[in-house]
Each structure stands twice: as structure tokens, then as C-alpha cells.
Image 1 (cartoon, rainbow, N blue to C red):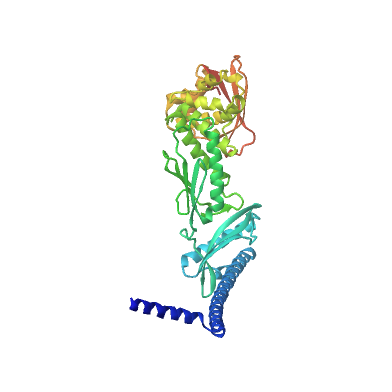
Image 2 (cartoon, rainbow, N blue to C red):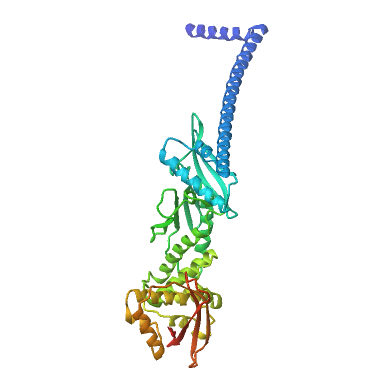
Length: 455
């Protein structure tokens, strides 16, 4: 017990001794702590200041490199503008002889465009992306008074920035845009293009599936890639996976990179896929059935894009009787269907239907040339109103002559009465490439609800 009391007393004396430090000793310890804290804060401030200085220096260097790059691009464009080949080539990478030769050819192409007044080299820079010693620059040029953008690539060396060959691997980080109907995978370069593709394809699917049967179709997946042989191709048509080549591989509209040409291509592919789904993948590869299917696809593409596809019959059918009639026509289409299907769907005879037959006449004349070249006499003669002797003799004479196929442009197709009183279609046509003035008239008689050539 005495040992325990002794330890307690020693500890108590130590505590008592600590509490009994003089005010001067306490003040000294407090100043030491504050001094240590101040030194730590000063050291931290020095480190932070040093980091800020280094960061600012790095930013200054980046800005200098960016400014040098922009100056290089503008000087290169200026050399193109004034036609100075030597100066233009100074900005090209001399590492590859093939690249220099290609740029000489590029210079000549620009010179030809300038001579025709077709191009304006503005030198405007639409975007810059620098990654250490590599860079991408989007440069604007106006062609026929429309803004276009080209993607140029640069590499920095001892001599500064030099224009190098296109690098499809340097397209930026992978990204994805989604809607309820579309998934678009792309890389940084194609940000604007991908946004337009997503908006357009979402709208097209909503329109198409509004009156066609899209039940069971998966969500459309689109891969925008820089390395592709074709502008657009189905990777998996059944499961709706589409690959589109980046427009910046060549040249793109600066404001609408998803331009009319690409819209017509992609909308046609999507329209065909929707028609296939609606018709149960009908194989209509011959005769009027082929025309009706192809015309419906062209019309659907036109409905998507509001760009003229030339599908005049389906356009007038949809406008006069409603888009549901086009869907009904496709639902009733078979491989053996003929033009009488149109009458069945709308419930009116062809001469009273108020339809625009121009593209049908063009197709029928193209089919005639196709059958003539293939020497399919029976199928070819079936296109004529051979009940009339003069028409039959003319048909035999034309078949025997076996003239080279001609491509017709139908200017108009008007309905009136034939000499015998029946309906007759009077088509005004021109042959593509024909330098003769004027036009030709080709007549079609309505025979058993079918248009047959009568001249």
C-alpha cells in the first residue's frame, strides 16, 4: 500500500509542478508555437506561390505556342491566297517527300479554284487543339460563297510548327450522345457533326415510326469514325448499327457538317431499313413492285430531310390522301404487285387520282432501256400497248434497232383523252446530254388499269 501511495504522490507533484510554471515560461512556449506556425504557413505560401508561378509560366508558354501556331496557319493561308508556292511549302513538313508532292498538288488545286472565283481563303480559324507538340486546326474557307471547314494537322519541331499529313488517330477523346431512339459514338473533332446527326436521326425515327410499323426495332447506334472507306455503311443492319465517316476527313460545311448530301445518303439507308421492317423484308426486285418499293423509300427519305428525292408519285399520294395511304400501300405490296395497287389503296382510278406521274414515267423508260439491253423481248413488249397495230409495229422496229440506252428527264406528264376516248398520259421528255433544242412527247395509254407505252 505504501508503494502505491508513493507513486501517486510523485505523479501529483509533477502535475502540480507543471501547473506552477511561471507566466513568463507559458508566454515563451506560446511564442514558440506561434513562430513555428508562422514558419509553416510561410513555407506553404512559398510553395503555393512557386506552383502558381510555374503554372503561369506553363500557361504563358502554351499561349505562345498557340499564338505561333495561329500565326503559322494564317501565314500559310496567305501564301495560298497570293499564290506564293515557295512560302507555302516552307510551312510543310519536309520529313516525307510524298507529303510535299501532295501539297504541291493541293496548291495547284487552290490556284485553279481561285482562277474560277470559286473560293475565298479567309484564314479564319474555327478551332485549335494542342497536345504537347501536336495540334489540330479547323480552318475556314468559303466555296461558292458558302462556309466550309478543313482540318489541318501540325507538329512542332526546332523550326516551329509545320503542317503534316492527316492523322486519323489524332481525333480526340471518345464521347457519346444519346436520345431515346439514338446513341451516337464519336470523338472530339466530330462534336458538332455528332450533335446534328443525333438530332436529325431522332427526328427521322419519330416521323417514320409514326406511321410505319417499327415494333421490335432496337435503338439506333451510330459510330462516327475517322478511318472508314465509305461515307456510311451498315455494320449490323438487322440490329441497327450504322457507321458514318467523319466529314472532316475531306471537307465539311462549317455551319452544317451533316449537309444535304450526307443527309440524303443516311436518310435513304434508314428509310430502306424502316420499309423493310414494315413490309416483312419483302424482296421486290422486279417490275412495278420494285418501282413502288423504291419510290416509297425515296419519298420517306424526302419526308425526313425535306430535300427533293424526285419521288413525285408518292409525294402526291401522301399529300393528297395522307401518309397512312403510303403505309397501306407498303403493307399490301407483294413481289407480284403492279400499278393497280395504287388504285386499290386510294379507291380512285388513275386518271382521276390527281397524282404526279413524272418519276413513274422516268422509271418506266429506264426499265424499257434495261430490258432492251438484256434482250428480254417478251418483258419489253409487255410495256407497250400492242393492241394498237401502229404501236406494235413501232415497238418491233425499235426492238430490232436495239439503240443504245438513253436516260430520260421527264419535264411534265399530263392526263388527257386518247383519240379512242380512253385516258392517256402525255409525257414531255428530254434525253440527258442531248444538245438538240426542244423536247419529245411520249404517250401512254391506260390499259386494264396499267399504263402502256403508245408512241
